Length: 198
Image (cartoon, rainbow, N blue to C red; front, side):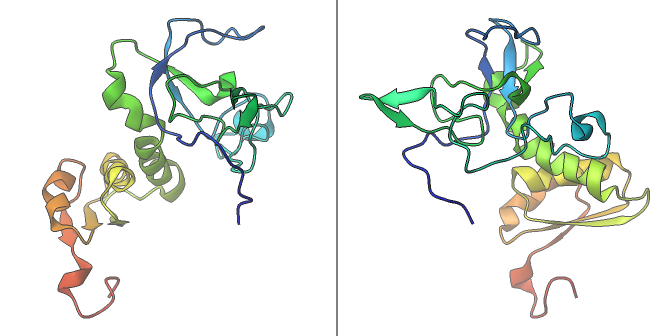
């Protein structure tokens, strides 16, 4: 469903240090450690002011936007030709340019090569569980796929005090690690002749 827009700098998960800020930016300053957030917050629209949604009217996910919001122009180029932005973050680059609402300031002691997964994988899985699924204490949760998002979903279920957290994955090597993230049981669909939900 996306209109292809190339060339563009892809990437949406990273950690970095603010190099400079634009006019009027006061939330961050040069030297601050930040995580790019592809679902940004303008902090003013009804969604940002609500505890029930993070779908900012201004900075919501838009895979077709290839430039900056205020002028629609790209900040990347090669040989005078534009290279387009991706998800407002374009993190597969040494430097990127983002709207201030698309970064979260973090503790400068946090190692950027490890906390970078918080900008998508961990926040997505944990947030989907804690803020959307909202499992009840003592309830059962099934987590399909035990990659970064799935492990974070398991951790979210643990924090919500679910009693059964069933990790489902085709790779049995992931099961041991998933225990550290709250999974109490494991199912490999390849081990069964029936659909896993049965």
